[in-house]
Amino acid sequence: MSLLRGIRDRILPPPPSSDSAATDPSDAPITEELLASVRRIEIRTRTLVHDLFGGQYHSVFKGLGMEFAEVREYVPGDDVRAIDWNVTARTGTPHIKRFDEERELTVHFLFDASMSGAYTSRDRFKREIGAEIVALLAFSAISNNDKVGLGIFTDRMELFVPPRKGRRHVLRLVREVLAFHPEHRGSDLSVPLDHTLLALRRRSAIFVLSDFAGADFDRSLKVLARKHDVIPIVLSDPREHELADAGIVIVEDLESGRRHAVDTSDPRTRARYGEQARRRVQRLQELFRSAGVDPIAVSTDGDHVEALIRFFKLRARRRAGGR
Image (cartoon, rainbow, N blue to C red; front, side, top):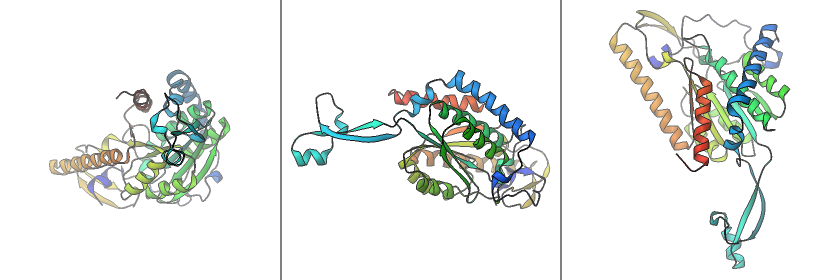
């Protein structure tokens, strides 16, 4: 286990209870506290969708889903990139393919429920922030009459909710994210990426919320990104990038349960930790570039709404032909 992997989790976290896992998250009790949390998120995200996003959501994803309509003869002014060269060669006359934009889009969320999401050095867990992001984007989707789905994963796909429309459906997804009790502690990103590739046949917008701490998911990400618009949302905490001088501490890897002592007062330990963190961030950036995906970085000490707004503005500029 790397130093980064161990310390990025939590110092002496309480052990999970023996009944914390559930084979079906819908069996989890719906408490008043849970309902209140879902309601707070709905109220906050409803305002944000109306005031901040407006028509940006539709403009950013407009044209993502296209249906083939017909092949017709080329006329001056048509986009030459749409020429169907097979038909053109067969008939001797230039023809183009015409596509119609699908009236509805499918937005799907892949949510990492591994134990590393139950960590924070601030007052909000990565999982809580992730739930609000899911709600904000899901309510934006249904305001545009789009379908929304959810996959929750650890080292396997533990829950898959097919895309549907409607406010009640979105509230169910938010509840699932907040109340879900995973059966497994670890994380394997290749599993949900491969599963989603088979499950979603139409081109969709897929938001992957994770700390992306695992390995060996490069190929799965690139294959999925060739068919769908994949947007990684990288959830992190400041302590995953810089180690504080706190003397000798006992750290636990939340995903494996292993514990060991670390002398955080040693400058060499802190430097090694920081270097591991920098290499991991650099590797992720290189992977995202090679896969052709636009990541959104969200930290527990930052403003996730601002991060989403920056993403929408970046996408809008690219659609307009800018940089």
